[in-house]
Each structure stands twice: as C-alpha cells, then as structure tokens.
Length: 420
Image (cartoon, rainbow, N blue to C red; front, side, top):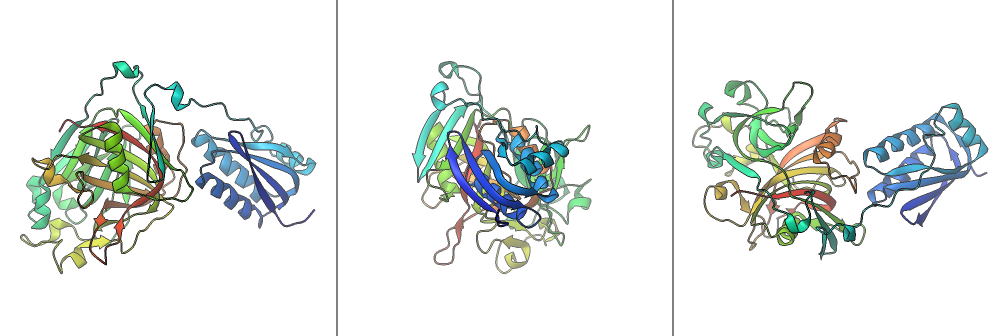
C-alpha cells in the first residue's frame, strides 16, 4: 500500500463516511485529525471511518480516534469504524478500543413536522428553526416573562464618576443571567483597578479584567462555590427561556451579521423585548474591552472621549476570532424611552431594535444539533480552559473606516420575552 494517507468523503443517509487508505502514523495522523475537524465544522456530526485500506496505526493515530470519540459523545453525535484491516483490528483489540470504536448508525431524530411548536424561516441565505422549550402543547402555551433588573448608572462611565456606593455584589446560578461592568474580588478597593466587561450564563461567569493583565478570568459553580461578581452597572435577567432557535447556512461558508440574527429572532417570535443567550461559530468578532478601569480615571474625565479613549479602551481593528465560538448574552428591545434606553444602543443604523450584548470568546468547539440543555452547553465551553476574551459587541458604522459588526457561520439561541 502507498504510505501516503488518502481520505475520500462519501455522504450517506444521516452520516458521512470517510474512506481512509495508507498509514495513520505520527505524521499522517495530523491529516486525519484535520479532515475530521473540517467535516465537523462543515456540519457533519455523525461520521464513520472505513479503515479497510489502512495497513498501519500508531499510538498517535489511536489518540486521534479517542479524541473524537469523546468529542462526538459530548455533542450527541456518532463516531466509529465500519471496516478495518486485520492489522488495525488487532491493534485496536490489543488496546481495548475495538468495542468503543464500533460504528452504530445514528438514530432518527425528531423532525420539525413532529413538533407542532416548531417553525422555519429563511433569511439572507440562512435557515432559522424555532422550537418551544415548554412541554405543554403549543395551543396551551403561555410564555413566562423573564424578570429583568437594571442595576446602576452606565452613564457614569462617560464622566468617570463611579464610587464605592455604586458597587453591588451579585451571585449567579441556575436560571440567573446578566452582563455589564464588574470584577471578581472582595470589595471596591480590591476591584477598582480591574473593572471590565462580564457575561453571566447561569452557573458560569466570565469577565475581562482591565489593566495590564489583559487575560480573561471566570468562575463556575463547583461544590459550595457560587459565582459572584462585584458590578458597577449591569443588566440582570432571571427565569426560564421560552424558545430554542438554531440558525444554519443554506450554503456552507455564508456569514450572517449579528444585527440580522436579532432582527430575524424578533420577527420570528414577535417579542417586543427579549433576552437571549447565543452560542455561535464566529466569522469575525467586532467589539471592545476596557483597558483602563473607569474607577481609576479622574472624576469628570470621559474615558470614551478623544484622546483618552486611546488609553482606555481596546478595540478590534478588524474582525477577530474567526472560527472561534462565542457565548453571547444580552437583551434586545424596541423601546426607545425609559431606563432601558440608558443600557442599550441601536442595533443598526435606521433599525428599530436596540440592544446590549457581551460575548465570551472560546476556542472552537462543535455545537450539538440536538441538545437544548443550556447549562450543559455552557459547562462544555468552560471545562477545558479555552476562553480567549470577553468583549462588548459593537456595530462600527463609521463612514469609510468602519469595520462593521460581528458575523456568524451558525449558532444556537435560547430566547425569552422580558418584563420591560
């Protein structure tokens, strides 16, 4: 057999079959790893391997198999070997992986037609599918409002007038979410040099400290440890989400602007104001994070004015984190007045929606197509220390020099109406 590894794809009903021939050794195992990763990023979550033409398998090749067995299990996918050469079969039998890697065809999933509360909308080359998260029949469904609490005075950021009296300690947990400006620590003096953007998704809180550290931090529920943050201002919401929405491209590689995502969700649900948590594959993030804590600026100084902004804020100079996964939390509303106006900005020029969103950015991790468990999804992002940043999302609409807004290849969203 040729030592060069050759991989060919054969789409099957409900799964992708990869025919592999050659040697899966320390060098060529990298190619197999890249092929599996590319297939997953393209949306294939059930993959079978035909290794009948593989004459050699090293420990590094075995490590690739074990890696993807764990990964596919975490996203409720299917992975295994349909055929193997005698050499490969013997090696897998000796290391005790033969039964673990035995291929089982994926079970038939529930389709939208089987769920009366499911609906489908196409927009800008993307398919949006929405399902109720309630076990009640659609005709008896009464969607509960998420309780929204606005904390503090975000306008103080523009004149650096925060004091110890603005500090509020907030604990998070199951069913509790939020975003804003805060820090981990034991009080105002301890935190004043580190206040930055945070995002809270139930039992996990991530934040980007300002200052020289420039490295994200997080707290996740463990035993009696409950995530807690000291915030200067923030948006908190609590309760159960009503809808689970998935958006996928009709053509692989298409990108969808974030403003289009929330516009479609607004039209699809009919909500005037809603909260959402989105886990999406990034096609480029446009955002900002504080470089200098506003608690360290002189009272009256505007850290967002010129030239102070150059020292106070880190901006993306171009869309960043392409191919990463973003955990995005925030609120969207059509209301233009009242307290909510202080916490939101227009989503897009000339649009009717206002929003405030923060994203925690993680190394790539495939999204499950079937699992609607928010807590499980969030925990899977944090378990391998893969967090890269926490940012406030922007839509840079400056004429000529603006870099636009964040875009996504695909994503899943938990959405619910707010009591605003």
